[in-house]
Amino acid sequence: MERVVEKALADLAALESAPIDGVLVENEEDRPHRVEAARETLAAMTRVARELVVARQNSATRIGVEILLNDPEASLAAAKMSGASFIRTDYFVDPMERPEHGGEMRIDPDGLLAYRRRIGADDVLVLADLQVKYANMLVERPLSESARLAREKGADAVVVTGSVTGEPPAMNDIEEAKRGANELPVLVGSGLALSNARALVAAADGAIVGTSLKTGDDIDPRKVRALLKELGR
Image 1 (cartoon, rainbow, N blue to C red):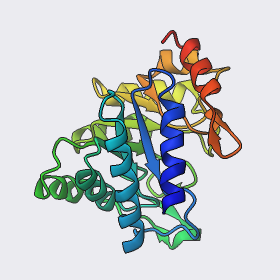
Image 2 (tube, rainbow, N blue to C red):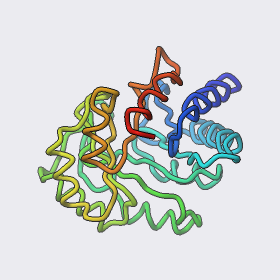
Image 3 (cartoon, rainbow, N blue to C red):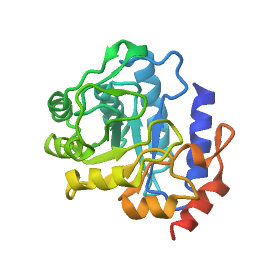
Image 4 (cartoon, rainbow, N blue to C red):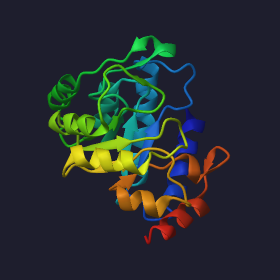
């Protein structure tokens, strides 16, 4: 755990070399991936998130949590107990399946927001993916309908991805999501890089960026600064 925390703090410092808005902590390197969080995963994610919250107390950077694959209640618990500001959930309103992980994913937006109220975490924002990458839709519908449902069920922002990590969403997918989201922010959730940043951010309201900011396994501060410069920040 000490090495995990050290790595997280180093990545935070690299990301804060430019004026970013927040960082998202994920257990991406867990093997095997579980659908619901194990006890040790929840404990570890809460520990890491808390270390980052304390480390950035003198900055405006927000810390977020996503415990993979599909346990947004665990993400909320870790965020609440660590002092983090938001969660991301891959599954919110869209019935989807991942055959390699047991089939149909649990979808319960009402239960998730009721849990948020129950633990006093109403100030923790929920960023909800629409028709997320790597999963198959069980009920075909346009992205605008998914965005509308997410808005009506209480998401604070919606996230649009490509079909795999590192692949950006199509422009018409962003536009489609905007139609259903109305005033709700629409975020790019994959594939944003220096070469397409201006176009994607102009179409959306923000982005979650990971792969393109790394050199090897580490966040590269030079890439962070170059991306933010490209976006005029």
